[in-house]
Image (tube, rainbow, N blue to C red; front, side):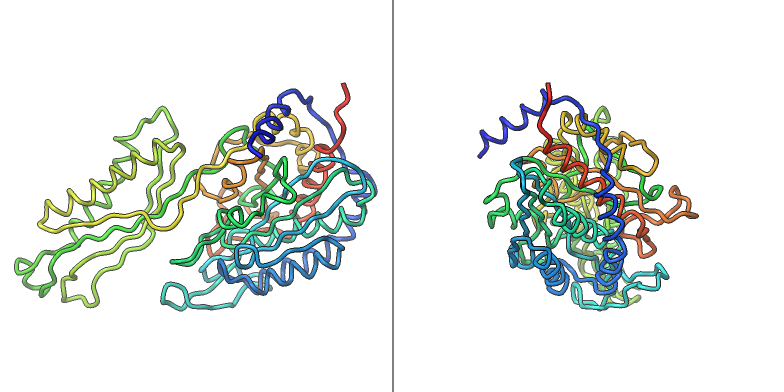
Length: 432
């Protein structure tokens, strides 16, 4: 399999750029499908589910795909859905991927179809919301399936639709996401020779961006504990207060990207997202626990940051008479990459699909996405899709993962058009 993929990647270098504009029939099919896709998106948005628990969402997706006549498999990586559409003409196998899961965030968008779902997460009652845009991605891929199924006689090759659970991470103690789907054989029978994907975010609705190189950062999650000795808050000398060295460590770790990292590369990003310590204001806690994330652009940078983080916590704690432990938890995500030759070949297609007729050439972001598990194995093109509603300044619009994040319905049709045209252009015979 590896030899075949290397050969396919090398062959891309020799292919000329392609230009494509959606045919009147494809445009008619997209227009006809869009109202139903918006309704599906609203339904999914109102019924979000966390990673490895997307039972309703995956059942809806599978039922829709079966009605379109696709070969459908369910239960992959617990709740994943894979569907295969065989075209009427010979051609390549093309993979498309969407996420299924939502986030433990209470939505504050004010939308008429906003989520009111609550569930237990990490021992707490939390809201659940599609505040990353995965509901839009699902609707887009279902739209591509609908359009191509209606026009399958003209489809060259095979399209493999992968609806993946737990992109935001599996629950503690569970496997999940793209890595588990791959372990369970999602890249086999048939094996895609290329992958296409998208991600919505803040930006003018329908605007497209693409990177020729790195798309996303590698991501690791860490847990650190600063351990002292509990005592009365009025008599701190009778114990060891872990709070001050924790505060010092949080500040000191920010010198890793600013003063300790090679700034000829994009620097790493280190963020603390959760701090726990103590139960009452007049009791010095016995320990403080932190959870954070590391974003890096190379494996060497990642390994360096991990070593420096561990040293920072332990040395800072010991300076105050406390101790510390540091560990990575869960499966980290690798950095994601586009295939540069493939991007250059298909750039005219993305320009034609964009609402502005232009494509912004982007550099990689620090967000992480386990689409990287696919793109590190198979030549890929992932593109950004602006989704900020008209009348809202994209520069100040709420970002993904914010409780105020809003993705506009209009971008569903843009995404469907982009994917259908990428598939058509990639499958066309090369004329010399």
